[in-house]
Amino acid sequence: MALTTALPTLTANEVVDKLRALRARQPVKYWAFYSSQLGGIVTDPALMILPFDDHMVHRGHGIFDTAAIEGGKIYDLEAHLDRFIRSARNSKLKLPSRDEMRDIIVRTTAASGKREGSIRYWASSGPGSLGLTPASGAEPGFFVMISAGLAYPESWYTQGLRVMTTTYPIKPPLYAITKSVTYLPNVLMQMEAQEHGLDNGVFIDEAGNVGESSNMNVAFVGADGALVHPKFDHILSGCTSLRLLELATALQGRKVIKGIEVRDIPVAEARAAREMLLIGSSVKVAPIVEWDGKPIGDGKPGPISRALRDLLTEDMRSGHDRLIEVPHS
Image (cartoon, rainbow, N blue to C red):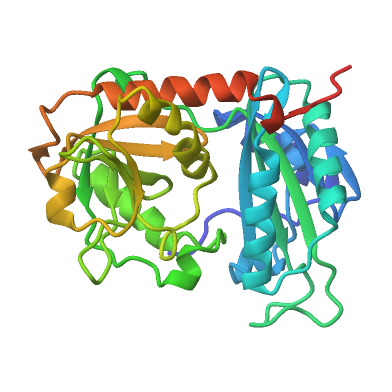
């Protein structure tokens, strides 16, 4: 069908006005954005944009990572930067120096004026071509966004989540361990779960072992009372999971859990677990009470998920070796 109205050629001012109108219609909270392509920070969400020919936009050649802002401080940024640098190496992307990235992240957080929220940062190979490989002489991009982050309903913690085994195949190991922007399998998994009235999905690998969820790690409290987590060689190395495994030694010392294991977890063993957990920087620790229509344990949130969430929450508030001060004015 032909268009019945003319397509205007817009002026720069008209474009900005339309971008602001678009943002006004969207329930988003983006507070500050740094772009190496702009050479500075903007706080107007309408101006938080990338060139259409950035290789990250049209070819998915980019990486990202996240960190949490808790009480005016950034939590566990160094661990996230470690993973970001590994992802860049796997993706053949150039980055600013570690010190420069840390400084930009801290200064962008300060510019937001927020003491609670989420930091997401990206690296791309830059604009200049619509080809398969980056443009010759393209300037790599580095971007930082400070936002409200993802919010989850309280019912996830009080009533638990319901998940399904996804019908989509797990990513090959190289792509699974790299936090790239190419999240199509994860998106399709999450959409599939929502279409079934569920909260999330679970990848299973070719050997029949548990992988991860759409954007979080999965762990279990086994029938023997041990905390069990899948190996990180074929799933994303979750910074929150790694830290939680360290913190969980306190529960082991108090004999709340029988041990801590990182290994392959066959599906049959996982289904017999006392508790099943989702773990991530935004969700922290949330209990899964149903998987493929069958209860996990007694079908109610268990005590270990609550204890682990409490440990992580306390660490995010007072783990001084994990916190970076933000110079709020």
